[in-house]
Amino acid sequence: MTPQDRVIAAAEDQVGYFGKRTNAQLDDFKANAGGKFNKYARDLDALGDFYNGRKNGYDWCDVFVDWLFVQTFGRELGQKLLCQPDKSLGAGTAYSLGYYRKKGRLFTSPQPADQIFFGDSGSTWHTGLVVKVEGGFVYTVEGNAGNPSAVRACRYTIGGKIIKGYGRPDWSLVPDEQEEDDMVYYEKLGNVPKGYQPTIRKLMERGALRGVKDPDPGSIEDNILNISEDYCRVMVTLDKLGKLD
Image 1: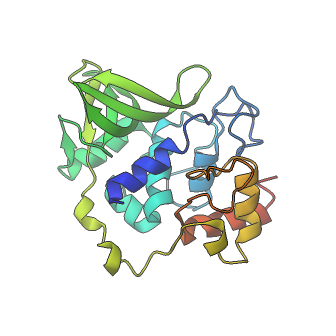
Image 2: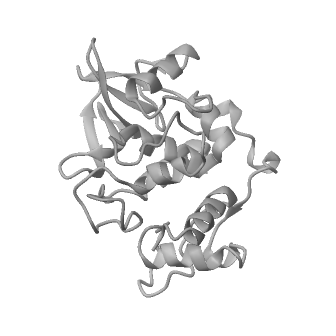
């Protein structure tokens, strides 16, 4: 898979996740629906200094995109691809767009795995991830979309007036697969180290981590996950703190 394919797959795996009314049941896709609390902000908040403050409970469309890159590439590389520094203001769409612009990475035509921004000349109000460009349309996956707030698949006419631009990561920063020795990925549950397995199994059984499903609906052992060691560490830490209960 290309780096673009990997982050797109991560986005599509989250479609159907609903924002929560309260800071509870954050890993369940459907439960407690109807608000702005979510697992994406929780996970980035747990990193301590990813943003300039805690973001859970606020609008989360940009948080969702940031989570996808950290989930897929790890924090350090994910931040570089997003053009964001530590303690960034990147949870806000206008600031996030500005980070791309400052690096010369803001474009007017879409490519898969771009970050799409919506707004007008005076403001930027929404964002998502481009997953496909085809037939005059740009297809996206967006967090905090619709009512109730959820991760949803959407489609827009290319050149639509509300589209402000496309932030494009510098994919040359991603090492070739054979050279990538600083990031470990686990394809299936059985590949996950035993110390992480109980937490990862819990997430899978609850539907919070799905991956590519095995044809046998009664089995999760062969689901393709491709999750990073960084992700496992964060989830285990949150599990020990009781945040996944």
